[in-house]
Image (tube, rainbow, N blue to C red; front, side):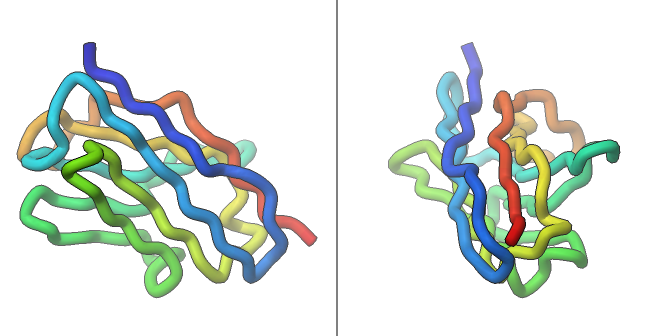
Length: 119
């Protein structure tokens, strides 16, 4: 059974940092596309960062220069390092996977971890 499980959310002040983790089970992330998404209160889910199997990364304009997506193949886990957090980064963060090399269709999702940025 393919499962994704996030951890690392919490409450921080503006300017602070958090690192989210997504542990994947049931398939290897070595050759798979993975991503982080978020949903702010009252808004739809948006893509935050994508990590392609060849190592290419893509970020939403709102997080470029502040967030970094990475992975540890040996741990079958990928991460989202979030620095210089802003109140508008508040929301539920979800990790997602396509289960394949392609990045087109994310079909596996974690349960979400909450991030709150507030003074």
